Length: 625
Image (tube, rainbow, N blue to C red; front, side, top):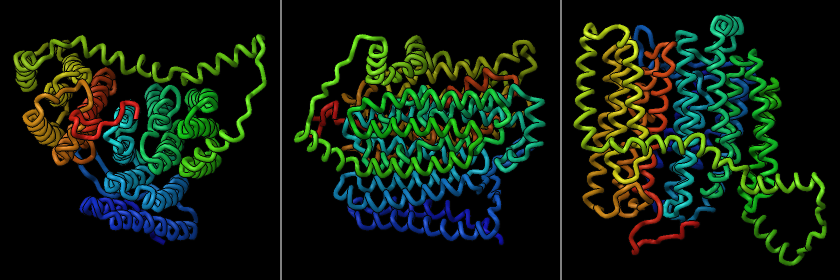
């Protein structure tokens, strides 16, 4: 029985529902909620019918090579869909819980100012969720992965007139982008390991995997480590755990569907999907198990001392996900899937009833409070418990640790680059770039020992520009131009590798140039309207008065960061496909440029258009609201 074609409907139905919701007027709550309700309901019914047919067919693993987006002599970008028991469990949990949350939110968010934005974003998330779980290769998975990251940012910043939701949304997006480094470098290394666009179906071929890893053990180990970094960032494992409670700033329904049940388990999904690749690497399995165990222990103590119910549920979920990591590392795939489903349902229930539980506990504490008469002694276990208690109150300084090892060094490096002002960029870097283009077409004039280092040098210049854009606090247009120029330097750097097709540069830049121009024009218009409130030193909330300009600028941001709405997304993969196996620094510099550049761009958008409005005639919540 041929049921493979039905897989397309699981993607098309959410896509159609999302597009329809965009054209519904903001005040039409009934049609917005009905569109989301019907979309998720149809997907749930489709799953039930599809699951019955799949059982009848004998639980056959299905693979649908949808279409090839781009093909050259040495490269192929294809969309591939895949269905097995992992997909089945994630599809059931996702479709049921999303349908439940939509039904709950129809009334919970009644008369909320952002009613339309909420349902638009949830349907967008559901589309990305289905793309991810049905992905049959890394490229398709990365499309869904990016959609999940953006929808997370939008839902955390749902209350966009407050400081903390917007600030935490940027923090969470930054952690997600760190995980994206792992995915990008894993994709790059896998191109060199397999010399093709490998599908997850072929990873189940033990002989094929064993043959390649045996002859390229270092690359295999590197890919596994990068996948572990991506999984740990997405599932809030150490040292990335602190982002999950910060993500609870959004509405309760989005907290339930994203960070209690579905999105937070995608690190587990990545490990399960790539399990045939790393299952015969004992070092990787030990690392995954130790990471899960350490996270579970630390998060358990933190959860015990939380003062808010949402953060307590968040850290409790981290504990369970750490245990699931241990189960995956031990090879208990079925147990991990059952555990995932149970944890997802439990956390969704807990978050949805949390407002009622808090109200009940406050009333109970008021009438039935009893002082704890137990006194602690001065012996060592008591001191140890007090130390753990204080560490847990401070969340083991995980935020400070992340800042120290990741963001603070980037900011310090950026602040050392203050010479990169608008004048020097045009007087120095643009002429040097033009000289680089000249020597690209006349490489015979360059000594071979110098030519070998040119790609790394040019990509390092791109990374310098991105770091300056990341640390810029005054001039939004300067930060924007630096990110645009970084993309041009990346393209030039890779073009010095042999067998590089110039048309690949055109594909990549065909997404960068329009987005760059659109964003710069938007910034110039905003500067003309708000000359006194135009910097990156705070949050200005200009979305109040310029909602259309805010939306246009967000589209420009997505295009410039390589989001799957333009050819620049395909161009990123093309660029990495031309980086040689021995050019690790070139791959690393480019990955850092893409990721940090994306953080810099989303920060420009958040600081200019989101947050409390600077003008007194608008609502201005307290900083801690």
